[in-house]
Amino acid sequence: MEKDEKETPVFACQRMECKELLERLSEYIDGELDPKLCADLEKHMAECNPCLIFVNTIKKTISLFKYASSEPLPKEVHLRLHDYLKKKCQGC
Ligand SMILES: [Zn+2]
Image 1 (cartoon, rainbow, N blue to C red):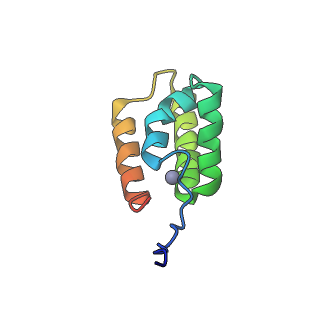
Image 2: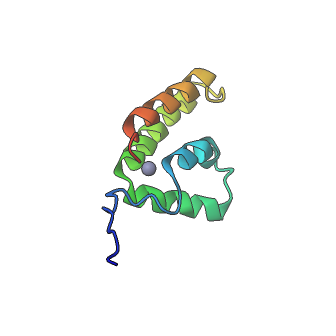
Image 3: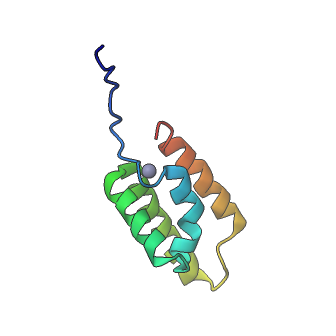
């Protein structure tokens, strides 16, 4: 019997899924993430372009927020991040 070869997905989201990245993102940005997880996150970003773009966008947004005020990231921004990533990383 021959083996059924399934198409390998283009996205290399094996180590960490986009969802997981999203869950860790606020910790990552706050610098509170475990260094190991941090490395996983960065590996994921190196192979998942939507996530890379997303995180870069978020970092810029957050640095603007921090510059403008010393308030923590508003909940609304968190919600928008979730929304954004859902759209960007659908098939991942
Ligand atoms: Zn991803």
